[in-house]
Length: 395
Image (cartoon, rainbow, N blue to C red):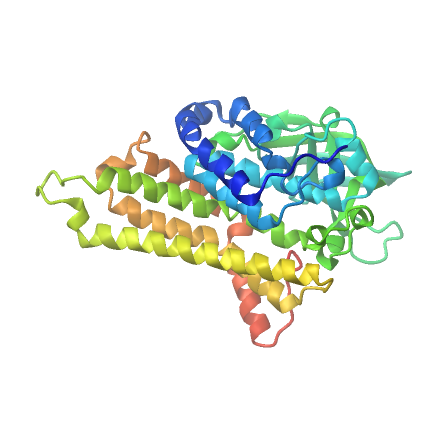
C-alpha cells in the first residue's frame, strides 16, 4: 500500500489522447466480443487511469475530478464503450474510499489495482443476520464486469425495529459470491459488457455496506482515514457525471469523423461541395458550440464543488440541484448535435462501418441511463427555483 509516483493532469490526459488511434482500431472487434478488450483495460491500468480518484494510502493519486473527466472525454473520442466502463469502474475507486476502512482493505489489501463493477438498481432481497445481511437478487447493466473481481449492488435495508423508512445502500460483494449472466445483446454501447449480476443468498458483513444518506450528507465512514477534500464530495454529483461526461467525447469523436469524411466530399447528385452547404456548416458549428458549452459548465461546476469542500463547507442544496440538472441534460444535448451531423452525412451514415453511426448509436444508449434523463432533475430544479422543496436526494 505505497503511494505511486503521481503523473500531472496534462500527462494523464496526453496518455488518453495517445490511446485514441488504438481504440479506434479495436472498436469493431470490441463490439463483436461485446466487451472492451483485455489489452485496452491493461493499457488503462498501465497509464494509471484507474488510480486517478483512488486514495493515496492504497496507491492512488487523489487527483481533482477534472482530471478523471478529461481522461474520459479523450477515451470517448476513440471508443465510447471504453470511456463508459472507465467512467463507471473508475468512479468506484473513489466510492470505495467512502466505505469503512476494512472494506477498502478487503479489496485493495493484497492488490491495489483491483477493480469493482456495479449495478445500483435497488432490487435485492435483504434479510438481517448477525453481523450484516443476507443478499439475493439479479441486477442488470453491470458495465465492465468481466474485468472486475468485486461488485457494488444497490438495495434497501429495512430498519431492524421496523421503525422508519429503509436505508438505500450499496453492497460490496466479492466475485466468489456472484454469477455473471451473459445477456448483453444491444444496439449501442455494445462493447461495455454490461451484463447481469446474480446473487443467491450470500452474506454481506456490515462494513461492506454504504448508506446513500451518508454520501448525501458528505459524512462517510471512510472519511476517518481518507480525509482529503476529494472524499467530501457528494456521491450523487460524481456518479452522475461518470455516465454523462463521456457523451461530450462521443460528440467530439462524431464531429472528428464527420469532418474527416465530409469537408472534402462532393455530393453525387449535384456535384456541389458538402462544405458549401448551409446545413453542413450549421451542423459543424452547432457541435463545436455544444462541446464548448458543456465542457465549460462541467469544469465550472467541478471548480465550485471543490472550492466548497476545500473550505470545509457543506454544499448548499440549491446548488446541488442545479448541478444535477446540468449533468442530466449533457447526453441529450450531445445526441441532438450528433443527429444533425448524421442528417448531413447522407445515406452512407446508416452503414455500420461508418464511424459516425457508432457514436450516434452509443449516444442513444447512453441517453437510456436513468441518470441521463433530464425530466425529473429539470422539474426539481425548476420547482426549487420557485420556492418549493427539493425532492431528489441523489444530488
